[in-house]
Image (cartoon, rainbow, N blue to C red):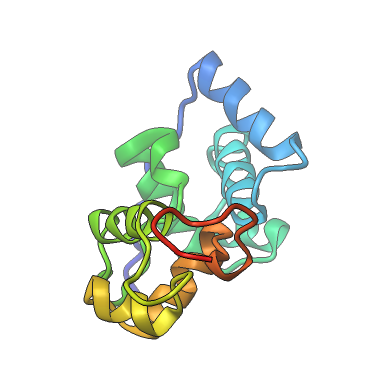
Length: 154
């Protein structure tokens, strides 16, 4: 049975060593990133240890060790962060959100004292659900406005 070639040795600069150690020790570091930093530190400290043994120490398989070592060799510390996850692209862009917020705060609907999600959806061209989600995200509650609206007869 043919053996696979040995993975490249990982040699860390003092700055990389310090940064990886900080990532491992820091409490606020995401668990996955800390595990990958620990993996690279172990690989640098034990250059002739097999991928399987390093994986056993960390509780991951050798394929995971190989993957993260290769990413580190290619991109250094930046290669340890998670890649963007696949999924559908955003349908509502930042310009649409900004326009909706400006409409909500700066205008008043005709024949009403405040915007509802339905009236705003019609005025902005977005869906009622999108208006609701944006208002909730930004803490906008036009129906609870304390100051009287301009142009509304009371």
